Amino acid sequence: MRVLVSGGAGYIGSHTVVALVEAGHDVVVVDDFSNAKPTVIGRLEALTGRHIPVHAFDLTDVDKTAHLFDIEEIDAVIHFAGYKAVGESVQKPLDYYENNLGSTFSLVRAMQRHDVDKLVFSSSATVYGTDQAGATEDRPTFATNPYGWTKVMQEQILRDVAVADPSMRIALLRYFNPVGAHVSGTIGEDPSDIPNNLMPYIAQVAVGRREKLQVFGDDYDTPDGTGVRDYIHVVDLAAGHVAALEKLAATSEPVNTWNLGSGRGTRVLELLHAFEKAVGRELPHEVVGRRAGDVATSYADPSKANEELGWRTHKSVEEMCADTWRWQSQNPDGYPD
Image (cartoon, rainbow, N blue to C red; front, side, top):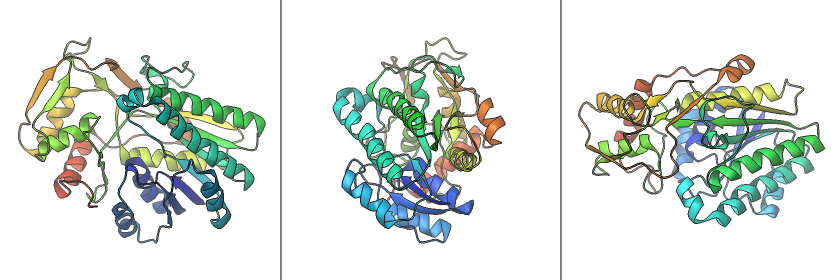
Protein backbone atom coordinates (compact mmCIF):
# COMPACT_ATOMS: atom_id res chain seq x y z
CA MET A 1 0.00 0.00 0.00
CA ARG A 2 0.99 3.63 -0.43
CA VAL A 3 0.53 5.10 3.03
CA LEU A 4 0.27 8.76 4.03
CA VAL A 5 1.82 9.20 7.49
CA SER A 6 0.72 12.45 9.14
CA GLY A 7 3.23 13.57 11.75
CA GLY A 8 5.68 11.22 10.05
CA ALA A 9 8.72 13.21 11.20
CA GLY A 10 7.72 12.91 14.86
CA TYR A 11 8.88 10.34 17.39
CA ILE A 12 6.38 7.51 16.82
CA GLY A 13 5.68 8.55 13.22
CA SER A 14 9.33 8.30 12.15
CA HIS A 15 9.74 4.81 13.61
CA THR A 16 6.49 3.76 11.90
CA VAL A 17 7.79 5.06 8.56
CA VAL A 18 10.76 2.68 8.91
CA ALA A 19 8.47 -0.23 9.88
CA LEU A 20 6.15 0.43 6.91
CA VAL A 21 9.02 0.44 4.41
CA GLU A 22 10.46 -2.74 5.96
CA ALA A 23 7.01 -4.36 5.52
CA GLY A 24 7.01 -3.49 1.80
CA HIS A 25 4.80 -0.40 1.81
CA ASP A 26 5.45 2.96 0.13
CA VAL A 27 5.31 6.04 2.36
CA VAL A 28 4.43 9.72 1.95
CA VAL A 29 4.97 12.04 4.94
CA VAL A 30 3.06 15.19 5.86
CA ASP A 31 4.35 17.19 8.85
CA ASP A 32 4.34 20.87 9.75
CA PHE A 33 7.61 20.42 11.74
CA SER A 34 6.19 22.28 14.74
CA ASN A 35 7.44 19.46 16.98
CA ALA A 36 10.02 17.78 14.72
CA LYS A 37 13.16 18.66 12.77
CA PRO A 38 13.43 18.37 8.96
CA THR A 39 16.78 16.58 9.43
CA VAL A 40 14.80 13.52 10.57
CA ILE A 41 13.87 12.84 6.94
CA GLY A 42 17.46 12.39 5.73
CA ARG A 43 18.02 9.87 8.50
CA LEU A 44 14.85 7.99 7.55
CA GLU A 45 16.02 7.84 3.94
CA ALA A 46 19.43 6.54 5.07
CA LEU A 47 17.79 3.86 7.25
CA THR A 48 15.30 2.72 4.60
CA GLY A 49 17.36 3.25 1.44
CA ARG A 50 14.32 4.99 -0.06
CA HIS A 51 13.41 8.49 -1.13
CA ILE A 52 10.54 9.63 1.11
CA PRO A 53 8.25 12.33 -0.33
CA VAL A 54 7.55 15.01 2.28
CA HIS A 55 4.88 17.70 2.33
CA ALA A 56 5.48 20.43 4.91
CA PHE A 57 2.27 22.15 5.96
CA ASP A 58 -0.36 22.27 8.72
CA LEU A 59 -3.15 19.74 8.14
CA THR A 60 -5.75 22.15 9.48
CA ASP A 61 -5.30 23.91 6.11
CA VAL A 62 -8.19 22.34 4.21
CA ASP A 63 -7.04 23.50 0.76
CA LYS A 64 -3.48 22.25 1.12
CA THR A 65 -4.72 18.92 2.47
CA ALA A 66 -7.12 18.55 -0.46
CA HIS A 67 -4.30 19.40 -2.89
CA LEU A 68 -2.05 16.76 -1.31
CA PHE A 69 -4.63 14.09 -2.13
CA ASP A 70 -4.97 15.50 -5.65
CA ILE A 71 -1.25 15.07 -6.40
CA GLU A 72 -0.37 11.91 -4.44
CA GLU A 73 -1.76 8.42 -4.95
CA ILE A 74 -2.74 7.30 -1.42
CA ASP A 75 -4.26 3.98 -0.33
CA ALA A 76 -4.34 4.47 3.45
CA VAL A 77 -3.56 7.00 6.17
CA ILE A 78 -1.86 6.67 9.56
CA HIS A 79 -2.71 9.80 11.53
CA PHE A 80 -0.22 10.86 14.24
CA ALA A 81 -0.26 14.63 13.71
CA GLY A 82 -1.44 16.66 16.69
CA TYR A 83 -0.44 18.57 19.78
CA LYS A 84 0.37 16.21 22.63
CA ALA A 85 1.50 17.91 25.87
CA VAL A 86 -1.03 17.38 28.66
CA GLY A 87 0.10 20.35 30.75
CA GLU A 88 0.16 22.72 27.78
CA SER A 89 -3.34 21.59 26.79
CA VAL A 90 -4.64 22.84 30.15
CA GLN A 91 -3.06 26.26 29.46
CA LYS A 92 -4.09 26.42 25.79
CA PRO A 93 -7.31 24.41 25.39
CA LEU A 94 -8.57 26.23 22.29
CA ASP A 95 -5.29 25.60 20.46
CA TYR A 96 -5.53 21.89 21.24
CA TYR A 97 -9.18 21.51 20.21
CA GLU A 98 -8.67 23.59 17.06
CA ASN A 99 -5.51 21.79 15.93
CA ASN A 100 -6.24 18.20 16.90
CA LEU A 101 -9.85 18.11 15.75
CA GLY A 102 -9.27 20.41 12.77
CA SER A 103 -6.51 18.23 11.32
CA THR A 104 -8.75 15.16 11.55
CA PHE A 105 -11.70 16.95 9.89
CA SER A 106 -9.47 18.12 7.05
CA LEU A 107 -7.81 14.73 6.57
CA VAL A 108 -11.00 12.65 6.63
CA ARG A 109 -12.80 15.00 4.20
CA ALA A 110 -9.91 14.66 1.74
CA MET A 111 -9.88 10.87 2.21
CA GLN A 112 -13.59 10.61 1.46
CA ARG A 113 -13.33 12.78 -1.67
CA HIS A 114 -10.62 10.47 -3.01
CA ASP A 115 -12.16 7.15 -1.85
CA VAL A 116 -9.34 6.43 0.59
CA ASP A 117 -11.06 4.12 3.05
CA LYS A 118 -8.36 2.94 5.50
CA LEU A 119 -7.33 5.05 8.52
CA VAL A 120 -5.20 4.13 11.52
CA PHE A 121 -5.68 6.72 14.25
CA SER A 122 -3.16 7.44 16.99
CA SER A 123 -5.22 7.53 20.17
CA SER A 124 -4.01 7.16 23.74
CA ALA A 125 -4.53 5.54 27.12
CA THR A 126 -5.63 9.01 28.28
CA VAL A 127 -9.10 8.09 26.98
CA TYR A 128 -9.44 5.84 30.06
CA GLY A 129 -9.17 8.92 32.30
CA THR A 130 -8.11 7.93 35.81
CA ASP A 131 -9.18 4.30 35.27
CA GLN A 132 -6.10 3.05 33.41
CA ALA A 133 -5.11 -0.10 35.32
CA GLY A 134 -5.71 -3.20 33.20
CA ALA A 135 -8.00 -1.26 30.89
CA THR A 136 -9.85 -3.23 28.21
CA GLU A 137 -11.18 -1.61 25.05
CA ASP A 138 -14.82 -1.76 26.19
CA ARG A 139 -14.17 0.40 29.26
CA PRO A 140 -16.03 3.76 29.12
CA THR A 141 -13.90 6.64 27.90
CA PHE A 142 -13.44 10.03 29.54
CA ALA A 143 -10.57 12.43 30.10
CA THR A 144 -9.03 14.65 32.75
CA ASN A 145 -7.47 17.30 30.49
CA PRO A 146 -8.09 18.94 27.08
CA TYR A 147 -5.46 16.76 25.32
CA GLY A 148 -7.23 13.62 26.52
CA TRP A 149 -10.61 15.03 25.51
CA THR A 150 -9.33 15.69 21.97
CA LYS A 151 -8.56 11.94 21.74
CA VAL A 152 -11.95 10.94 23.16
CA MET A 153 -13.69 13.31 20.74
CA GLN A 154 -11.70 12.22 17.70
CA GLU A 155 -12.49 8.58 18.45
CA GLN A 156 -16.21 9.43 18.59
CA ILE A 157 -16.03 11.53 15.41
CA LEU A 158 -14.39 8.63 13.57
CA ARG A 159 -17.01 6.16 14.82
CA ASP A 160 -19.72 8.51 13.54
CA VAL A 161 -17.94 8.81 10.19
CA ALA A 162 -17.94 5.01 9.90
CA VAL A 163 -21.68 4.85 10.65
CA ALA A 164 -22.35 7.35 7.85
CA ASP A 165 -19.94 5.58 5.49
CA PRO A 166 -19.73 1.85 6.32
CA SER A 167 -17.09 1.32 3.60
CA MET A 168 -14.57 3.02 5.92
CA ARG A 169 -12.10 0.84 7.81
CA ILE A 170 -10.78 2.62 10.90
CA ALA A 171 -8.40 1.46 13.62
CA LEU A 172 -8.31 3.33 16.93
CA LEU A 173 -5.01 2.50 18.63
CA ARG A 174 -4.81 3.34 22.32
CA TYR A 175 -1.25 3.20 23.47
CA PHE A 176 0.39 3.59 26.77
CA ASN A 177 3.95 4.91 27.32
CA PRO A 178 6.16 4.76 24.21
CA VAL A 179 9.89 4.81 24.92
CA GLY A 180 13.14 3.59 23.34
CA ALA A 181 14.67 4.31 19.96
CA HIS A 182 15.72 2.59 16.76
CA VAL A 183 18.60 0.20 17.41
CA SER A 184 20.84 2.22 15.04
CA GLY A 185 20.72 5.20 17.41
CA THR A 186 20.00 7.52 14.47
CA ILE A 187 16.34 8.28 15.26
CA GLY A 188 14.72 8.68 18.66
CA GLU A 189 12.68 10.93 20.92
CA ASP A 190 13.72 14.58 20.78
CA PRO A 191 11.40 16.77 22.90
CA SER A 192 11.44 20.39 21.78
CA ASP A 193 11.27 21.66 25.37
CA ILE A 194 11.65 20.23 28.89
CA PRO A 195 10.54 16.59 28.55
CA ASN A 196 7.07 15.80 29.92
CA ASN A 197 7.80 12.09 30.07
CA LEU A 198 10.07 10.09 32.32
CA MET A 199 12.39 8.29 29.89
CA PRO A 200 13.58 11.30 27.83
CA TYR A 201 14.05 13.24 31.07
CA ILE A 202 16.26 10.49 32.53
CA ALA A 203 18.18 10.38 29.24
CA GLN A 204 18.82 14.13 29.36
CA VAL A 205 20.04 13.87 32.96
CA ALA A 206 22.39 11.06 31.90
CA VAL A 207 23.82 13.10 29.01
CA GLY A 208 24.26 16.21 31.18
CA ARG A 209 21.46 18.41 29.82
CA ARG A 210 19.47 18.30 33.09
CA GLU A 211 20.83 18.46 36.63
CA LYS A 212 18.72 15.71 38.20
CA LEU A 213 15.51 13.73 37.83
CA GLN A 214 12.51 14.71 39.90
CA VAL A 215 10.41 11.73 40.96
CA PHE A 216 6.84 12.96 41.42
CA GLY A 217 5.60 11.21 44.55
CA ASP A 218 6.69 8.11 46.46
CA ASP A 219 3.49 7.70 48.47
CA TYR A 220 1.29 5.94 45.91
CA ASP A 221 -0.27 2.57 46.71
CA THR A 222 2.40 0.69 44.73
CA PRO A 223 5.27 -1.63 45.80
CA ASP A 224 7.81 1.21 46.22
CA GLY A 225 5.38 4.14 46.37
CA THR A 226 6.26 5.46 42.89
CA GLY A 227 3.93 5.53 39.88
CA VAL A 228 3.52 2.45 37.71
CA ARG A 229 3.37 2.72 33.91
CA ASP A 230 3.20 0.35 30.96
CA TYR A 231 6.25 1.17 28.84
CA ILE A 232 6.24 0.02 25.22
CA HIS A 233 9.28 0.13 22.96
CA VAL A 234 8.59 2.46 20.05
CA VAL A 235 9.75 -0.23 17.58
CA ASP A 236 7.14 -2.65 18.99
CA LEU A 237 4.58 0.15 18.80
CA ALA A 238 5.45 0.88 15.16
CA ALA A 239 4.98 -2.82 14.36
CA GLY A 240 1.54 -2.58 15.96
CA HIS A 241 0.57 0.19 13.52
CA VAL A 242 1.66 -1.91 10.56
CA ALA A 243 -0.29 -4.92 11.90
CA ALA A 244 -3.41 -2.77 12.38
CA LEU A 245 -3.10 -1.29 8.89
CA GLU A 246 -2.81 -4.72 7.30
CA LYS A 247 -5.77 -5.99 9.37
CA LEU A 248 -7.95 -3.15 7.98
CA ALA A 249 -7.45 -4.53 4.48
CA ALA A 250 -8.96 -7.86 5.61
CA THR A 251 -11.68 -6.95 8.13
CA SER A 252 -15.40 -6.39 7.56
CA GLU A 253 -15.71 -4.27 10.73
CA PRO A 254 -15.84 -0.52 10.01
CA VAL A 255 -14.16 0.39 13.35
CA ASN A 256 -11.72 -1.61 15.45
CA THR A 257 -10.17 -0.49 18.73
CA TRP A 258 -6.97 -2.00 20.09
CA ASN A 259 -4.81 -1.31 23.13
CA LEU A 260 -1.10 -1.39 22.35
CA GLY A 261 0.97 -2.07 25.46
CA SER A 262 2.90 -4.82 27.18
CA GLY A 263 0.35 -5.47 29.91
CA ARG A 264 3.14 -5.11 32.47
CA GLY A 265 3.63 -2.20 34.86
CA THR A 266 7.08 -0.77 35.63
CA ARG A 267 7.70 1.52 38.60
CA VAL A 268 9.44 4.89 38.17
CA LEU A 269 12.42 3.88 40.33
CA GLU A 270 12.61 0.51 38.56
CA LEU A 271 12.96 2.30 35.21
CA LEU A 272 15.53 4.70 36.65
CA HIS A 273 17.66 1.80 37.94
CA ALA A 274 17.41 -0.03 34.60
CA PHE A 275 18.62 3.15 32.87
CA GLU A 276 21.49 3.51 35.36
CA LYS A 277 22.52 -0.03 34.43
CA ALA A 278 22.53 0.92 30.71
CA VAL A 279 24.62 4.03 31.41
CA GLY A 280 26.92 2.34 33.91
CA ARG A 281 26.54 4.85 36.73
CA GLU A 282 24.06 6.20 39.24
CA LEU A 283 22.00 9.21 38.17
CA PRO A 284 21.04 12.07 40.51
CA HIS A 285 17.38 12.19 41.50
CA GLU A 286 15.13 13.58 44.21
CA VAL A 287 11.63 12.71 45.30
CA VAL A 288 9.19 15.64 45.22
CA GLY A 289 5.43 15.93 45.66
CA ARG A 290 2.92 14.29 43.36
CA ARG A 291 2.21 15.99 40.04
CA ALA A 292 -1.39 17.11 39.53
CA GLY A 293 -3.35 14.76 37.30
CA ASP A 294 -1.01 11.76 37.57
CA VAL A 295 -2.62 8.38 38.25
CA ALA A 296 -0.92 5.80 40.48
CA THR A 297 -1.06 2.89 38.06
CA SER A 298 -1.52 2.61 34.31
CA TYR A 299 -1.06 -0.54 32.25
CA ALA A 300 -2.77 -2.06 29.25
CA ASP A 301 -4.72 -5.22 28.74
CA PRO A 302 -3.35 -5.94 25.23
CA SER A 303 -4.98 -9.37 24.82
CA LYS A 304 -7.37 -8.18 22.07
CA ALA A 305 -4.46 -6.91 19.93
CA ASN A 306 -2.48 -10.06 20.73
CA GLU A 307 -5.32 -12.26 19.46
CA GLU A 308 -6.76 -10.24 16.58
CA LEU A 309 -3.58 -8.69 15.16
CA GLY A 310 -1.14 -11.46 16.00
CA TRP A 311 0.93 -8.70 17.58
CA ARG A 312 2.67 -8.47 20.93
CA THR A 313 5.56 -6.59 22.48
CA HIS A 314 8.98 -8.25 22.37
CA LYS A 315 11.46 -5.75 23.78
CA SER A 316 12.34 -5.64 27.48
CA VAL A 317 12.71 -2.62 29.75
CA GLU A 318 16.48 -3.20 29.62
CA GLU A 319 16.40 -2.95 25.80
CA MET A 320 14.25 0.18 25.99
CA CYS A 321 16.86 1.82 28.24
CA ALA A 322 19.86 0.63 26.21
CA ASP A 323 18.33 1.86 22.93
CA THR A 324 17.32 5.22 24.44
CA TRP A 325 20.84 5.72 25.82
CA ARG A 326 22.43 4.81 22.48
CA TRP A 327 20.26 7.45 20.74
CA GLN A 328 20.82 10.12 23.41
CA SER A 329 24.56 9.56 23.79
CA GLN A 330 25.07 9.69 20.02
CA ASN A 331 22.79 12.75 19.75
CA PRO A 332 23.25 14.66 23.03
CA ASP A 333 21.39 17.70 21.70
CA GLY A 334 18.84 15.72 19.71
CA TYR A 335 18.49 16.23 15.96
CA PRO A 336 20.54 19.01 14.37
CA ASP A 337 18.61 21.99 13.01
